[in-house]
Image (cartoon, rainbow, N blue to C red; front, top):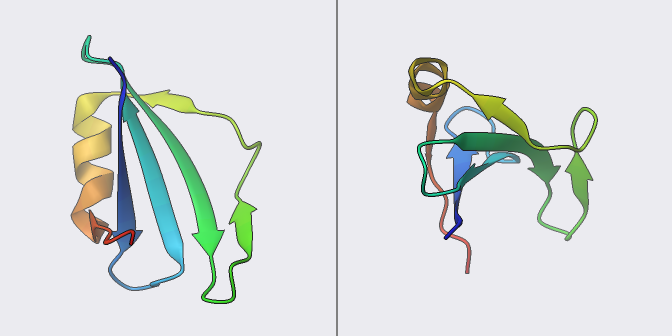
Length: 69
């Protein structure tokens, strides 16, 4: 079962990461920008990219879990 966790950048509150974990230790990441007026811009090629755990942990030091209400 795939779980999706959204993280928000600590320095730029408009930058988000969407981390998809497939339950078999594979993590895929998509980055996007989202503004308060509802505009959402997917950064890069708009695809999920698989990351190694060590690299993902280092990247997530700049992020915290987002409160998506």
